[in-house]
Amino acid sequence: MFHVLWDLTKFKFGILLFFFLPEPAQKCKTGPVDLVFLIDSSRSVRPHEFETMRKFMIDIINTLDIGLNATRVGVVQYSSQVRTEFTLKTHARLSNIVKAINQIIPLAQGTMTGLAIRYMMNEAFTPEAGDRPKVPNVAVIVTDGRPQDRVAEVAAEAREKGIEIYAVGVARADMTSLRAMASPPFEDHVFLVESFDLIHQFGIQFQDKLCGVDLCLESDHGCEHICESTPGSYHCLCLPGYTVNDDGKTCAAIDLCAERKHNCEQLCVSSPGSFTCDCNKGYKLNNDKRTCSTIDLCAEGKHDCEQVCISAPGVYTCDCNKGYTLNEDEKTCTPIDLCAEGKHDCEQICVSAPGVFTCDCNKGFKLNKDKKTCTTCKSANIDLVLLIDGSKSVRPQNFELVKKFVNQVVDSLDVSPHGTRVGLVQYSSRVRTEFPLNMYHTADEIKAAVMKVEYMEKGTMTGLALKHMLENSFSEAEGARPLSRSIPRIGLVFTDGRSQDDITEYAKKAKEAGITMYAVGVGKAVEDELREIASEPVEKHFYYTTDFTAISTIAENLKLNVCPEESQGEIEVKDPCACESLVEFHTYDSLMTCPLAGMTARLEQLENQLFSRK
Image (cartoon, rainbow, N blue to C red):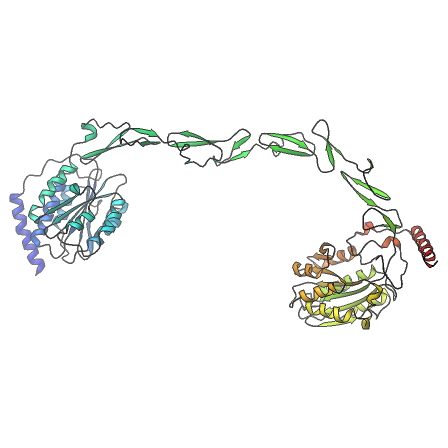
């Protein structure tokens, strides 16, 4: 019933408009504008009032230069919901726009003006809807009541996006809400009329705004660079690289260097609104055109230094490696021979290297701890207990390699009842003494027993093994000689993985008990645990290799023979050349045999013993 009455009213009102409408005003030639009407079609807008609003829109667009490259028009109506009637790009001809406006059917619900403004901002003024870049956005909001939602915040957001808003209120409209929606100045953008019959007054003023003269062309605007016309006004702009001065007309060059608005590392070269970077002398500009790098003649090979080239930006000086001195030509170097110059304090042999020297001894002598003097070498005995990892991660074939490793170590020792004693302990989830220190008295017996050791498998309880070694293996009951004899006690731990228990306590206690601890790790052995087990200095008591096949190399280089200064007990004279120092890393190339020197050392020892008994 409502739609029938509405259609009848439209028909009658259309006849009246046909007879009484004035002739359309002459079209004005403005710059392109994107114009959107946002019209209130709530239930408070009566049918004949909506027709007046329809005529109001048609009268305005009749005066505009309509076209896709001129003024574009879109219409959105709202009540409790929002609906686009047609977008900015829908119609390019005036007649089609008029036809579309005459076909609008009111929504006749509430008044959600804030919702409508957000919809207009997000949907109507978008490139997809036909909004053009750098073309003024103008919105005309027509309403007859107080909004049922908030409008101030969303209207401010729309204005910040560059939408110029005209707010037209009719009859019951709220002036505070109109001012909250409209763009400043309010006297040009806010209109409140008593009835829809008077809405044409706004249309006249709005047309004057859009169809005003072009002040850039018709007046002495005074702009130094560019005058940009707006409906009824103008403003001055500047060319790129310039900014408008406070007078609003003249322009000043933008000096980004002076304003420190650049990212040059060294020098900034200014031009209006732009800059380029440069570098100080001795530097060159990098590919990023911002940062600088020193011109490094040394790195570029543009020098004639024999050894060391010291670079400075764009220049260089020559120097020599340690142990060399720079010649007078300031390019070449000569080695410093401290031995030849007599600048050393070696007792027997001075071995020269550039700028340094080391001392050595004649055959039959060993270098003392002061690394300068020499004495004849007296070999001594040790008590050695090996802890070998028999966990399942070792695997049978690798365990055989471990046993060979043990025998290689044994081969490097002088095993006898009064000399070196060897004990072997295997551990996994439990600990088992394979043989104590006092069981075997020759290297062959020990090696045969090692090869018969059976693989335990299971876990890795290294901490438990250390406890067993401390409390049992080095007891006198198992063959360890009394501490009063000062026989060195050495423990060697071989493992391939992380311990499943704590090692800290008994590793510490073992070292505090005077046991010199060595740690040999392979594969997944944890370096931190190995270092915690090893005695100081750690570098001489800690060895690691990634592969079981390489442990034989460690055995070859590990020399477990000691020459303590105050060793007591049954001293056996051995090859003086086989004894170097307490468990140090040596290569076989450094070992030598010297039977004649051995005999000399033996005679010297007997002679010393005779003198000591007098």
